[in-house]
Length: 298
Ligand code: NAD
Image 1 (tube, rainbow, N blue to C red):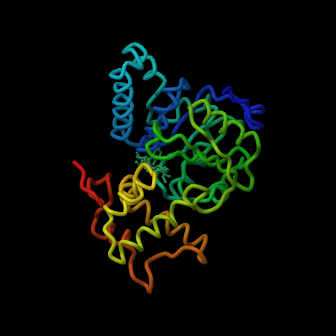
Image 2 (cartoon, rainbow, N blue to C red):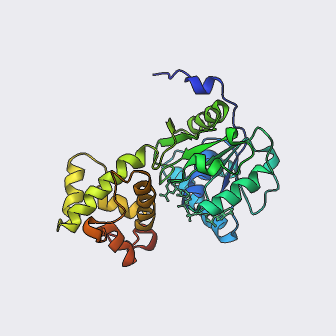
């Protein structure tokens, strides 16, 4: 089926050069995906090690494609040249769209976004991959909030088709259009959503995690719950998914959402107790990131 261009793409500015700030789990994945689909991307971090890790991950993913016969080694080498790692903002003057993917800390994000806004050209689109922080809130210190929106990828970026494009109060149509078009060029399925804590996906997912946590607090066996949800047709159960997301990230995101929807979501467990997920964090069982969560990893 040939897909018609949507209302956003018709007016979109093409992204010929992208940039990502942060070469972590998400930034590295975004750089890989952009390069893989042919849009050159600058990958900036403040740490040399982070950049090396980001590149290593991309090489690994491209090498898998070579193993499967989907790419030749020449094509892999060519695609890798689309990722330009950097520790400086040197070439940011020619960037069409920036994805900010630094740590989930509003102060750090504010600093990074205002810094980069001062270096890029006037019509460069700035986006943030934040999971929870309001886009309207992040736009507060920007001089051109109309050029800013959310671009929320999911982990792992190369496998998850969905991208939430979040429209803040002052986001302009051109920013939404360019971001939607870039997401499509990356082979993703963008949806445009309004700004609120958790956007769309996490508003569905976190009450589900809350329901799962309560079952565990009441004595349910998490492995059985996972098996049941797999039989129900979900690709993985809630315990495994929490291991992928990271328990600390989940607790933090839940706090932001409980603040936003106090009538629907709680900060902790019932009667002032801790939730099963909070207890996991206390016991340093963060998930795959430290090789122990609900399950143990090599
Ligand atoms: P991460 O800790 O793996 O990576 C963050 C990177 O940002 C690090 O490499 C760090 O060195 C770098 N950094 C810090 N300050 C910087 C600066 N001033 N300039 C450039 N780089 C800087 O984190 P992550 O999991 O990749 O998350 C990044 C963002 O994506 C967060 O906002 C997070 O909420 C969001 N997100 C994460 C997930 C997930 O599942 N991990 C999913 C969707 C969205």
